[in-house]
Length: 100
Image (cartoon, rainbow, N blue to C red; front, side, top):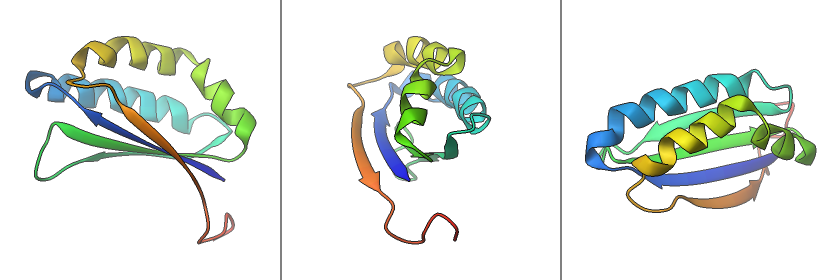
């Protein structure tokens, strides 16, 4: 399993709009067969900071996700809401195993 961690900081006046757009992307992503998880987290101390945790079952699912209408709509909608460019890092699941 491949895990993508995305960190986003949005403009203060865009927090609610970002949440709505990201929820739609998350729900669409969870319907994809190659997506195991799509978590959206908001920082308690700074509500303009978000972390997305995306878990893909296989590498091919990543490319497929980027071609979906909900992902493309999300990028178009939220890019102007960001206070700074988002950052990403890739992780490999160590524990629990995919069955657990």
